[in-house]
Length: 137
Length: 137
DNA sequence: GTAGCTGCAAACTCTTTGCAACTCT
DNA sequence: AGAGTTGCAAAGAGTTTGCAGCTAC
Image (cartoon, rainbow over all chains, first blue to last red):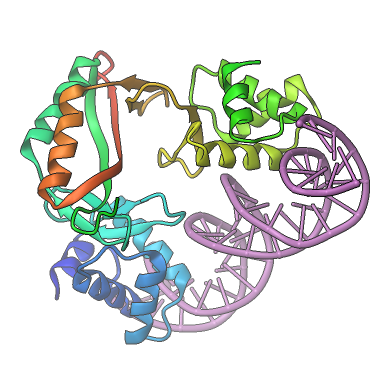
């Protein structure tokens, strides 16, 4: 049983064939797949998986904090398995997503919220850029 | 002629009654209204304004960099007139949006992008929190 | 006069949901 | 056995668009 399956079972979810398939797709993903992406990849393993189940499963996993739903201003959602804390830089020319961490940034966020009189519950930081080497001017 | 009307005229847009109405609504807004909000407020001034025109106008203004479209993970968009550069802290209990600026943060973002080999084109930072005074534990 | 703009309604995209059949536990 | 899960199709929400008529310039 995979680690993801383990966590789902502990949350009381039945381990159906469709769920195993979707969890495998998520576990294997090295990118930030859209619902459609997950659906396509799942179908390659088990043609019977429906997109409704993909939507339902991803919503549950988000609730359980097993995955995170992102909205990178593209008009649809992308998902990512929760792992270490990090942020994203989206390459505007290729759509590639680069992950990064920065301790200084973490501290600064907390401080800004505190100074405004708030307890930081969640946050979102995304950078959008283009490769320096491919810069044309 | 208002400042916003001025900027639109310079961009070559015809100043129709509907556009003036929508620009007035935007100029008067002190919050971050949704399309529906803008539509409702515009209708109070001119009942003939349609929601299609509101959508079309806001899209154009976004293209022209006169307003910014935000997606605060609510399932719809909110708009804001471009002004000074700042970020948002969303109060999770009331939905209120607090604006803030932080120079240190600006520098840090640039540096992170540069270190990753990117030229920063755009970015997004949102904090989500709850009032410290109303914190229950 | 005419290119651009508008309202209306239909169409679109992404996502959610009701339901009857099915399946883990 | 039975609660949870599924596929399907229909419904929802937000947004976009084709079109015929209208309007600022």
